[in-house]
Image (cartoon, rainbow, N blue to C red; front, side, top):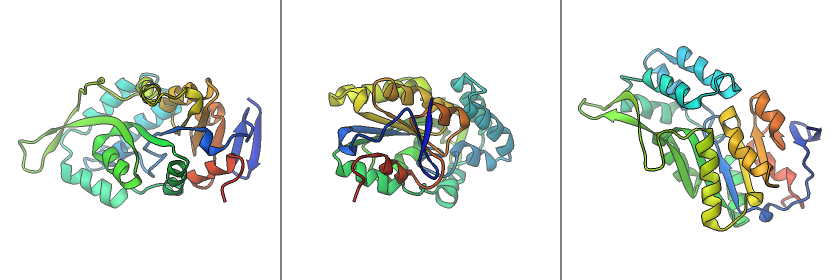
Length: 248
């Protein structure tokens, strides 16, 4: 795809800044390393001394080298067995930070009457709290099974099956985006999808293939190359520079 640097660190591929933000009705975000600064699963694993092992699988999956996301997630979650709820709380309070520009971008989207969706291969323990902090309308993520028979509650190393399925992977992210758009009565051309890893590509493709917008944020090379907009420096709110007229 032909690439043009709109401004330093903001790259467009086969995308002309001609639309207004208000031309869109829904924006979908990945969570880990997109809306927030960490990969939660890697930081949880640190509590049981398995961060390096888990992070290596995470990195390979995000680069697209492991194509079965569900299998890679199950392998990583199994390594979390024995982590306590208190450990996860420390990850949330001590390590998790909202990425720069996230609040500003979401405020701008809501001011343009857009709905905001969070779809994550991560976990509800973090996603639901990020949803509340940022005023996001809807979130879908995975549930870690907790053995509550212990004093503090410990992770069993398994995930909980939900009504919609077992794991929120790339295919489920895409399906959720399209389902929410359908329930809103809008077309994929009115949707924006934003992420950083290979499992974000299906939902990003659902937007870009239909005339919507796909956005990579500080992403892996494979994702940058396929996104219509790539934010390679600065915060999430740099997306606002793409729209015409520029926000005042």
